[in-house]
Image (tube, rainbow, N blue to C red; front, side, top):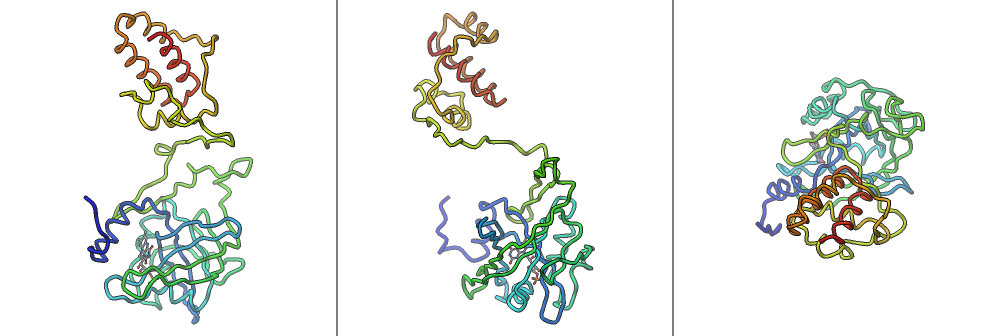
Length: 296
Ligand SMILES: Cc1cc2nc3c(=O)[nH]c(=O)nc-3n(C[C@H](O)[C@H](O)[C@H](O)COP(=O)(O)O)c2cc1C
């Protein structure tokens, strides 16, 4: 299916785009009206756009239903200050509750059962229960249109970051398994960043990776090695050569059992290399593949 956005209704555009531009982190924005009424609402059109200056942007859009504006937008236009509270799993249902369209004079901290904690530089309070809070100054509000669904970008400079001590290790580094962030997808779908679904992808270092196009043809066209496996093999910075000290019992067994049938042998070797790569053993996988290249 190919969709021409011009032919979709606003609700359809929103539906498809929110499902594919996902997961999005959730900005739980605390703002204050010029009369001093506090507002607390979640926004998943949100991200970090600059570290120097430190800038995050979120977007309280004009309502698709009736093209009205959200209290959060009205507040930041009057009082250009916001606290962005990061939402972790333990807060998700209360956060969703705060997204109800309560009247402007209703304090959503009370409605959603969160505790106010004074911020140090801005007027809106922080959410005590949040483990990471950003005190921000609104530097610009950029309207993307005047129709229902039009984003209203609230561009914020982050002035202060409050981090719960429990998130930090001895070197003051954040342990993402302790933060347990949530993120929004399309419709009612969310995801939870937990130990079981976190994984590491080592950064390609300063030296360039050799690239998938530099892999031997039999590896590049392997029926067993996936794109992820080839990506790992192509991320070494010089073409690997046979390491004479590499000694692997399982590889010897494969050579012994499949010596008579080269295509069977290649299949077994690639399956073994795939298993090694799944364990992030890139050097070993390369050695297995190189040894087989010289045998087949
Ligand atoms: C997790 C979550 C994310 C949301 N993200 C957005 C968003 O990015 N933009 C938006 O306009 N509304 C978003 N909403 C809906 C607003 O939170 C909702 O319209 C809220 O009532 C606005 O409150 P306010 O009028 O008090 O500012 C989201 C709701 C939830 C539950």
